Image (cartoon, rainbow, N blue to C red; front, side):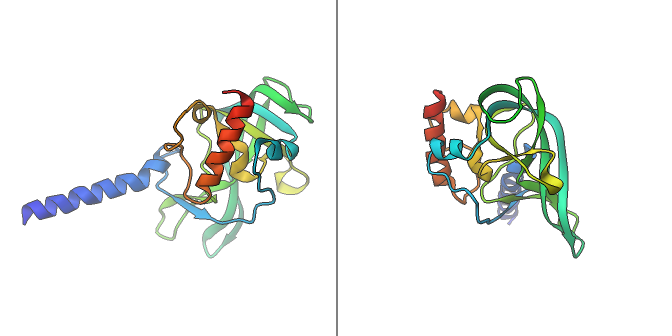
Length: 199
């Protein structure tokens, strides 16, 4: 009987650890809840992304993230984004006045929220995963217009315009951190981006 209980406890610990592993990389948050969205851009190639992009840059993610809830209902945040500061390291396309060394804000399509029990978790769009502080990324960016989003750039096509440098250097893409929704299409796009950026 004791052996069965210990085995069950061991399985429970493994399951809880697996649920928390994705969040532990970002402020020890517990899990992701993925929402679906009707994306304005559905890129099939690097060139598709580039056409819709005003700035293509390699950036370093700085230690400054600001959760921005957009609407609150019934005691919980129903939608929001996160404003992340990055430092521009290299520019490949520039239709705006952005320079190497600039620190700019980027809206990421996720936010931190709590359920009614007080447990924190991320809500993301599709398979998007937050950028990690201290990591480098290639970002396809568009300047925002008016309203609350105007003070920062948006990533073209949500997750489609964000590529970690460490992922671009890989030969095997099975370990790339990405949600289940749209993973296959994202990996194909990543391969095309990698080829065009000559990694």
